Structures are given as structure tokens and as C-alpha cells.
Image 1: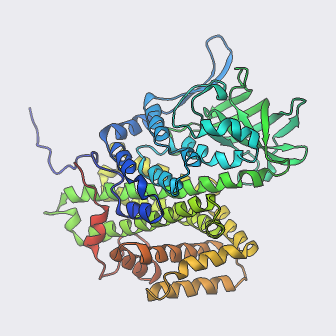
Image 2: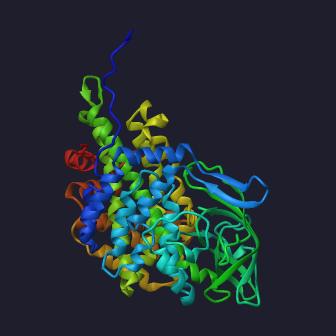
Length: 542
């Protein structure tokens, strides 16, 4: 017996091209990677497919499990993943989302990789080992001999899962193992020790509090050598095929990012190879940290895009009080406001990717710009994501609060990027250090922002406010978050005025720089071109 007819329910968002994103595609061309558009759309169609979305769901509903011992009691320290995880990883590696740009001489290779990392997001958790592998290569180059052995395998586009001697595999993934209980972001407080052995290797003893993706093939880790804090390469399996005594104590029970295994690790005289000079551990890993910070910005921008297109899809097809939600003025304000925030994040993300690419090719000016802008972007874009995710979820009403919508998973993921690679205070203080110690970085930043001078009075006024903030050194550390926020807003405003859609740029300057904006999303002023902005955030479903 049928009790009622189901209607006015929106079918799940699937069957679209995740790369069909105007801000992303414009940035791809502008930052020198237009040649990658065809592959980006191929990956976008995969990412928006029902199959990939299902893989993401399964990988999160069946999280990894730790097996410390085999049936006979032998220590094995293995993590088992659902097959969906491996399918997601295979696609990511095959399309070069990991370290492939380091083996690609084409200008824009890192921009193309950033765009693909942004586009392939059916599950955020598997992006962690992808990101760490990308970031490991420049750090590993501090030991040319190790780089000569491992780099070709780290950049290979073959996903070869399993614990085997690294140099016998067809492709490798790299992880990071830095954080300890007593230190957190203060890695100089690490107590893990590294003692030299007669064969030139070291033996590591200690505990790491947060090691993500422990089934990677090799790890970069920090330990106290005789000469001070030093970076080391630690393989999971030694050249003779035996397991390196890197013990997985437990997997973390996390708020989000549940498809990705994060573990506590103990080194029981684990064999390690030194990367860089003794006592120069922080200097050795700084490039790695900056690249994973870039991926934090990319991931947050991608999360915002996913949130706003899901909301736009829902309100386009859902009716209430006799009208589609998208036609109701207040909902249009909310949706447009979310879209403006998303595009501001994307345009900044692509500019940072371009700076990363040109910096990797020796452009000193872009290196200086990236030094400040990356810390600014990491702080601000990642801070904006949780509120954005919550508002996008609310656009779906009660339907957004249930797991089947995918929005709770997006919301749980949203705080992570602000915490990973230095929480908000760490990022803000890093900006202050750069401003105080490296005059050229502020000059590069000012040159970037001033490229839009005279084009929008609201932006010009905001730039003057930033200059006033920085000229007053009293209590600068106390005011650090506000200073960094204003730096981020003028940078986003400058980029949007020069490169963004006029309607988006005007709405951004009117609301974020002009002061006519409330504390919640959906408080854009009158006069905004809502239709133009919303159309850019509405996915085309086949």
C-alpha cells in the first residue's frame, strides 16, 4: 500500500564536471597552465561522477583499521584500508596529484597540479599522503644521494601499495612524522634521539604523537642528533626486506578526515638516513612545511567550492512557500555571499600556486611574495572554511544535517586545514616574523596589491588601513590576527578586482572591504548582481 507520493526532494548532486569552475579555469590560464585544461576536465568529470562520490562515502564509512600483530603473534604494524580508498589513491597518483610536478619541466606544472588537487575531492582524507609526497621532494634534495635514489619513484605515476623495500617498488608515497606530545608545533622541543651508527645511518628512539598515513613507504622525521635537531628519512621496510622498527601504537579517533589513518608511532632503534646537516632540521623541512601549507589553502578552497555548489544545486531544485528557494531574495543573498567567499579563496589559491611554480624555477620576486602571502592565505582561507561549511549545510535544511547528504562529512573536515601545519596563531605569528625579518617580502606583497591601485576606492581605503596597522608596532603580536586578516582581504580584493568577475569583485569590496556586511553569511548589501554571482556557482548536471 502506498501511503504518499515523494516529491520536492532534490536528487543528489552527481554527474557533473568538478572542473567546471570559472574562477579555477581563469586562474589555470592566467598562471601559465592552460595546457592542462583537457586533463583537468577529464579529472573533473571523474570527480563529479556517481562512482567517485560513492568511493568517497565508502572510504569514510569503512575507516582504516590497525593490525599490530599477525595470527602467530609476530609484530606487523599494518593498516588495512577499504578498496574504495585504494581507488581514490590510484586516480590521484595516476593523474600526478602527488610529486609528479617535480619531474615536469613545463612552466605551470605546479599550477596544474594545484588545480587537479582542488578538483579531485570526492574524499579529503586520501589527500593527506598525496600532499605529503608532493612536499617531501624539495626536502629530500638536501641529500642529493638519497634524492637520486628516491625521487624518480616519488614522482612516478604508479600507485603501488604494500610494505616492501622502497627501491623495489614502482612508485612511492612519503609521509611526515614531526609532532611529539610535549611540543606540538614547537618541534624544537622534540625529544626523539638519533644516534650515529658505524655504517653512516642513525638509530632513532622516541615517540611521535601524530603521524598521518603511516602506511606510506618512507617518512621524513625530526630527531635530536649529536649536532642538534636534524631531519631524517625513515623507510617502513629496510633494504633487506625486514620491517624497520617503527611501531604503530594506535590510530587516532578524529573529528573528521576519518578515511585517513593518523597514528602514534614509536621508534625502537629505527634505521634512518640523515637529510641535511645535523642541527639544521627545521631549515631542511621548511620547504616541505610551506608546500603542505599551500595544500591546506587548496583543500579549504576546494571545500568551500564543494559546499557552495551543493547548496546551489539544492536550492535550484527545492521549493518552499510556492517558489524555488533560489528565487527567494534572502536565499539568493546567502548563496551569493557563499559564492563570493569561495571565489575569493580560489583566486588566492591559484595565485599562490603560480608563485610556487615560479619560485621553484628560481624567481626571487615570487619567492619573496610567496613567503608572506602563503602564511597570510593559510591563516585566512582555512579560518573561513568552517563557517562557510556550516552555512552551506544549512541551505539544505534538515536534509543537510543527515549523513546521506555528504554535508556533515564536509563540515567535520572543515576545521582540519586551519590546525594542520600550524594553527591560526602559528600562522599569524609567522606573518609577523616575515614582516620583521624579511623586508623584501612586504615589498613584494605591496607590489602585488598595488597593481590594483586606483581601480576601487574601497580597496584603496583598505590598503591604507593595512599600512596604518603595520606602522603602529605597539602590541603588534596582540593584534596579529586582525593584521593578518586585513592583509588577506586586501590581497583577495586586489586579485578579484584585477582578475575576477566584475560582479564578484564588486560584492567582495562592498561587503568585505566597504564595511557593509553583517556577522553572518547572507548579509550582502543591495545593488549586488546576485544573478551573475549565483550562476557561476550552480553546477551543470548531466
